Amino acid sequence: MKKEHIKGKANKIVGKVKETIGDVIDDEALEADGAVQQVKGEIQEKKGDLKKAAERPFSIDS
Image 1 (tube, rainbow, N blue to C red):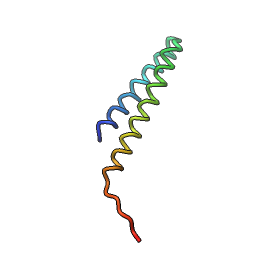
Image 2 (tube, helix red, strand yellow):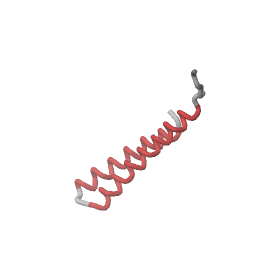
Image 3 (cartoon, one colour):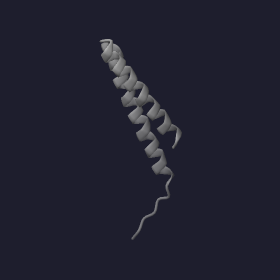
């Protein structure tokens, strides 16, 4: 697993925790912050996927 994937997973987990806590204590700002952090995690994971794909050899078959 690459660094971007690890960062992405961590942000998704922390975001989910923030969102859940915000929901429990009725803090809309914390809930929204958690949702944003989860999206950031998704983006980081996709960035890792793109980097991984770019490292693979490219060939054109005729």
